[in-house]
Length: 158
Image (cartoon, rainbow, N blue to C red; front, top):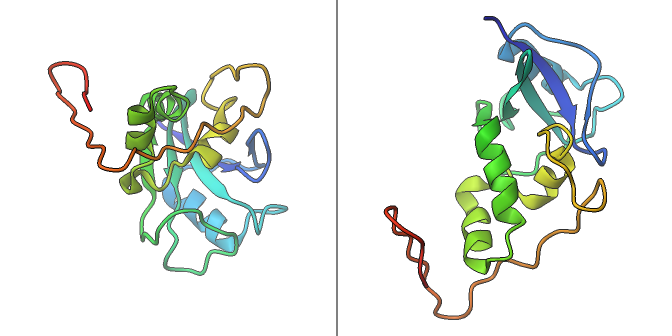
């Protein structure tokens, strides 16, 4: 089954799909690099659709100069996340457990901070609690000296 690629604008809250469909990730990346009409200076992601959304990609921040801002570290290729993982990351950012929020805020996940993910509630097929723009979670700062231990066979501990 072939995929279609659409550019998502996160400068809107909630995020919107821009006009245009692309047959390959390279075409969508080129559109972002060229500046999608009406969204040249917006925070843009790429959605891969195989009927429904299956992946979200953070387009390259290096190479052809990207006109809009990027909210992560420099990278030369699109960094993709599966829809199920993106939904789990939203739940982690929204968790009341500080240990889970600390893990969600890890620098290795710099493409997917709360500020970006909260705008994707509709696109991810999630229902925002009480509003289309949920409040950001309490800062995910561990207590001084706090260590997080994750036991893959059971629950994490502090």
